[in-house]
Structure formats: C-alpha cells, structure tokens
Length: 137
Image 1: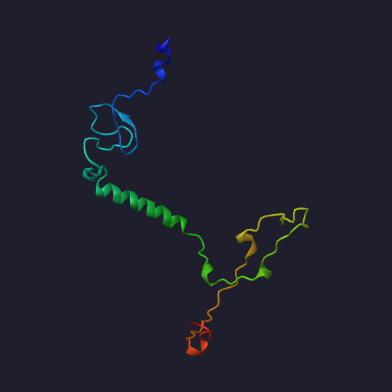
Image 2 (image 1 turned 30 degrees about the vertical axis):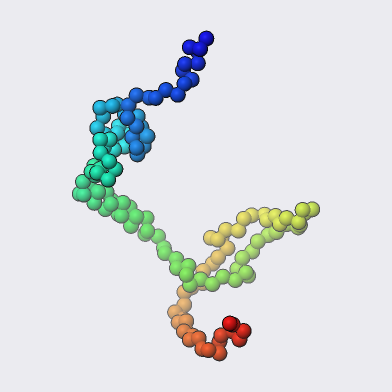
C-alpha cells in the first residue's frame, strides 16, 4: 500500500543544477547545456564565451538598425506649451454613482497640434531679496 505513494516523495534529480538558469546537467558536464555557464568554476572566474570582435560586430549591427529606425521626424516636446483649450473630451452626464464616464480615452497624440517652433529667447530672471516671502523663518 505504501509503495503507491513512493513517487510522491521529493526525490533529488540526478545531475548538477546550473546556478544561472537552474537547468539540470549530467554530473560530468563542464558547461551548462542551456546557457553555457562553466559549471566547474565560480561566477567570478567565468570566461566570456564571445570574443571581443564578435561582440563589436553585434553591437555595430544593432546600432545600424537603430540609426535606420531613427530616420523619422524628431519632435522637440520640451518647448511645447499646452492649454486646456487644446484638449477636447466628451463627457456623458453624471450617473447615479457620480462617476465620470468618457466616450473615449484622451490620447496625447490626438489632442495636441504642435505650434511651429519660434526662435523667441526666454529672458533670464535673477531673484532679488524682495522676491522672497515675508514670513519665512
């Protein structure tokens, strides 16, 4: 009767567990079969499996892809000023629970038309002692 529950016991799987990805590997394995972690060495003694030239080539390819994607128009949002008049949100009448229900969610891209950038310089203002609040201790 008790042999039936033998498979329920927590039995230890054979092999070495990779500390990086928890993959079970054979006892005599030097590298993890999933992530190539060197099982016989501590984490600070691991050697890079990718040489510098290959890594540089990979980074160059990634940067080229990013440069191709950046070909679009760049919008400078830092100089934009928004007013409540620029945004229109349709709101239904209040219900019994006084919750506001909108017909659509406002979208930043749909609510703003950027004005043409002007070359107006902002004047610098220097604070004076008279600008300080009176009742500051």
